[in-house]
Length: 446
Image (cartoon, rainbow, N blue to C red; front, side):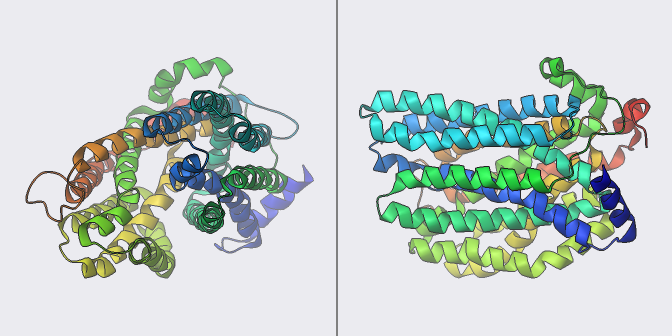
């Protein structure tokens, strides 16, 4: 317990965004996301290439594998969130599930090369991959929910914007390193090593997160029970009320919109304006990253000044405008100024997806509510991909909105989703806080 007294003293002594305590906590929470982005990179960026190198070419089976993995991840998040909120151990409330879930998922990733090297028949290989991917993602989800809850547990309200930014920075660094390493391995026809690197990096990041994080139990009795997994909708309504229903719908719209853009922006530039892959990546993702770095401090100050709900409305507005500009651009050179708005909307949205729900989560149910927020965002991605495919079919090179189909319509729909989220957030702004916390007050010892 001595560790926590020291933390509390440091917490009282400094309010700086760069205090020693906060820098340690930023690193603690960010390390997990650094390792987790090796997982997302292998599955969202390089997965089809990796599967192609092992002779697994069925697009349908690859899509089924990814979809089942996503649903397994969401299922694991719900399990991990519910159990973590009711957990009390000598190692604290969050650390056990983060460690056990993270290491189990990492170990299963390490087994994937064994399957891909030993199995020769495509259907057998597919079956074994399903047997590894589904439990691996359930375990990762079990670790993911209590990790998300750390943003609410470890940071005060005014510190969570900085936490969200730190997590996003380390996520981006992890993704960038993964892309570079994985690309070189794919060129060398060594895709099997990618799974070993992914498993090891994620496992090591989990271990360091658990070592560095404060291992404490809440100073109030748990009201959550493991059987609450079966009553998630009722619990969300009872303890979250209208505000959380609106936030969950907002999360879905944000994720749907951003997924359409993230998976389409590079390909859209290539197809619409006939440019090279490297040039498309540089002028969109890399330049947007540069603008994000430049805008980082002003964004933090804006969010702190106007509050997270109003900042979320602003983020939705910026991202929606960014989508509309992508939809209506008719010359490639327009992307050089469009990504300025994109960078502003992107970093605000990414930060507030973490910081906003952490502010409004009911006490004692941090992991389960943060987990459900993540689920509502993730579950829309397969549907976004499906709709994107339908709209693009045969119209990939379409430049304008003059007729239905192609990337302009994909980005238009993404923009409409963002603008719809503004309506939901305006209702959140009108709802006064007590509905979220009054029913939990009897369980809290401040």
